[in-house]
Amino acid sequence: MKSFIKWMEGLPIILKIIFALPVFDIIWNVYRLARSSVKKNVLGVILAVVLILIHVAFVWIVDIITICTKNKVLWID
Image (tube, rainbow, N blue to C red; front, side, top):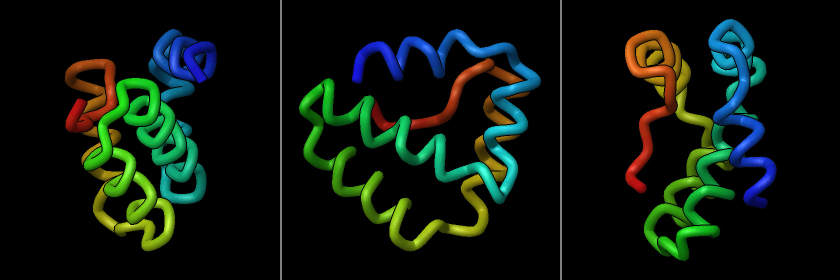
């Protein structure tokens, strides 16, 4: 899990933006789940599972904005 998190954080910004597009945004949701599980954040795990199951339509827009401005994905951890 930690290697997956480190790999996702080390990606070039253009690849991060591509992964944030609506078709591939599930990858960032899995990243959120892995990050919360490593930190043992129960609320984060529950929210990540909900995002994976429901796949909220606006999350990909927030992901692209935060990647472009801060080079990371917004999450509660």
